[in-house]
Length: 279
Ligand code: ADP
Ligand code: MG
Image (tube, rainbow, N blue to C red; front, side, top):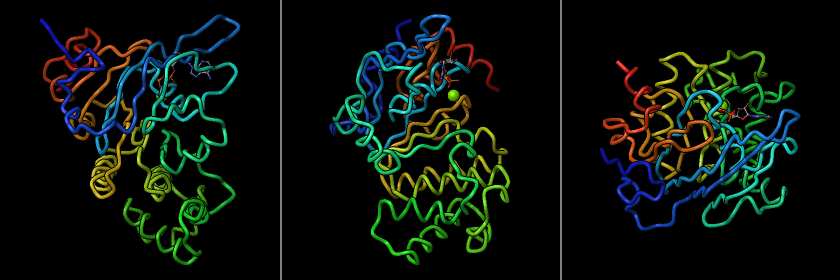
């Protein structure tokens, strides 16, 4: 059986038709960890791209290198023990691996936003949700406090937080896990990022809320023309929202291409196993 999905430069990919430069091109990225036990090639020659306004699903079992890939894109690998040892991360054609920490800070939370799996790692416990979102807004948009607060309330409402004009003044510990995750998503979207990297953002949420958040993301994506790198191990999510999919296995891309084609005709043993477990 021939399957052209495996090639990262596959021209049959559905989203490769726009002719515009992709928002993100990851080329032969290699991120290694240098530990006492030896060298761990966590990401070992990963290549993919995301076209403007499209969603790429990055799937793979735990430990396959999905999070390290996303952290590498944003220059957030703890150094040492980690290090990007090769490859490039082209965001709108500029190689982020060559950026200084200051330049990266200008990109993060502005052009590129990230939602992590665990919201507590990104919310500050000593500030109210509102103050954190307002700060994020004012960092990137010329709005006064009142305007920024109104926008924050609007976004909290959009992510399905009830009574947002009251809950905006709560501290993270006053909110449930699901509410915190929604607040995080609101915070990551207020800057209208060109690219959203979502690392298993709905894994900790119950199914109904998960569906709501996915609907919201696709809605906002259409409104803003945002591109999304969606990391998940939930193949239902891939089928629902992703244009393309890259399957990671042991630090490499095992399979890559149009989501529907791979869904219907997986070729790598890992992907076949993964998909055959679906109902
Ligand atoms: P995934 O997100 O797919 O579950 P990760 O990208 O988190 O996997 O991890 C890939 C590999 O890199 C794993 O073997 C993990 O143990 C290793 N790794 C991740 N972060 C570190 C770190 N800070 N130090 C050492 N090894 C790490
Ligand atoms: Mg991970």
